[in-house]
Image (cartoon, rainbow, N blue to C red; front, side):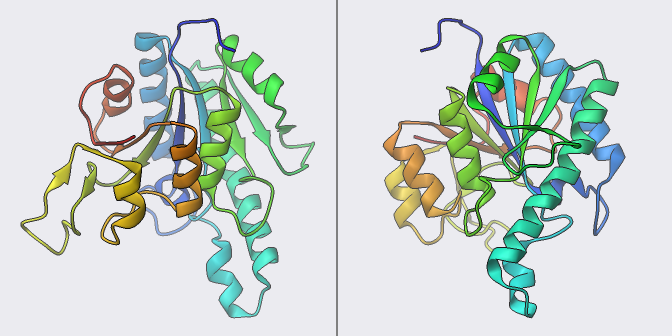
Length: 239
């Protein structure tokens, strides 16, 4: 049971965001901008921050499995890709004066320390950003589910899902000019409405069962992470 009053949040970053303006790989300029914003956010809010990273900018298991590679093998390849993103993020965070630790649910001892719940909580209490790579460590499970699971384990107050759009709409805003943004929706609606895509159903169901709010917001607008943590009405809240 937590006794401190500092906000503790989990930020979910997709692998595609690490590519920045590139089609593939890691864009150091994007990661540096993100690290600077995270440094400003932590200083201003006192938040304890955990981050789950995806790997789609390098390898997406579900995609390569259609080309002759077994799905489980493809998913493990994707988990290894998240480690590459994690290494880049932790290095650039520390370059910007933010203490950070890379943890992983896969055993890669020369690259990252193993993810251990109590150790992760201790890092957060000491003011370190905890970056978790390797998904859940299991195939057939998305990093969305890893984000919700980790947030619950680390006793986070909410999950922040960073995207390229400013929230959840009743229909695709890129195709429909009359699309309307939801400022708040229920888990039931997010799970049952086919036009709403927040996270996969396993992640959403787990968050719903444990009353864990999810905020979907635009990562590309500078300052949004801080605004969400401070309680401003940014993006869409699922609760």
